[in-house]
Image 1 (tube, rainbow, N blue to C red):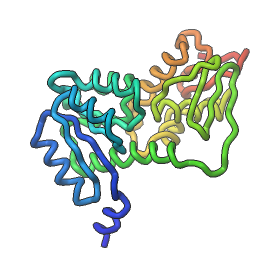
Image 2 (cartoon, rainbow, N blue to C red; image 1 turned 90 degrees about the vertical axis):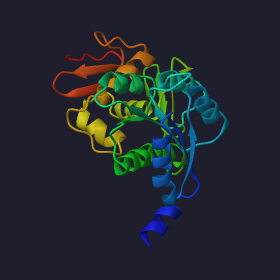
Image 3 (cartoon, rainbow, N blue to C red; image 1 turned 45 degrees about the horizontal axis):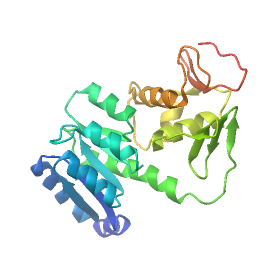
Image 4 (spheres, rainbow, N blue to C red; image 1 turned 60 degrees about the horizontal axis):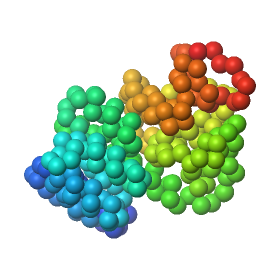
Length: 247
């Protein structure tokens, strides 16, 4: 009964795997398809980019090391045209790969030593955030304006000086959380709980990486922030115009 329920709830969910390890692709497909997922595979960077851009997927599982075009380049070009959730696969212990992937717009990362249960949990999490972004239509919320920054929770869009900001789902959720609490400190734990659908280790630096990327897109200087201030031993705060912040 539980298997039928799982299959029904995940009907028609299309996932693309981009990895040159065909055995791993088969393993993921064999695990996900009985649960109702429709799984496609591409084995090179250029092929993966082409398929991702010309078909509709609920999520993309993207390896870093690919023939023809590495995963970072695939992600960069994909993000120019698509906000499909991307779960990146990285080599064991390669923190630099995780940081680069997050900064370039990956929604999450997973070491290649993953278990199938962890893969499913991460996949569900990134798709859930994306689904909420697409289907949340009730209780229309007004736009939040903080100085020259406009954040529209309903449309899930943000603009600075009337110029649209190209944000990932996680970056938008972080900005929205900070904007709703403008002038008040949000701890890392509060931000993690609000924007993430998985349990983070308290020492996980992912929030800091996303904040760094968000600052860059806002043209913010961390040493003299116009928008996002770091409050020592506390967390982050979206500054109101003219406010003073203790670093």
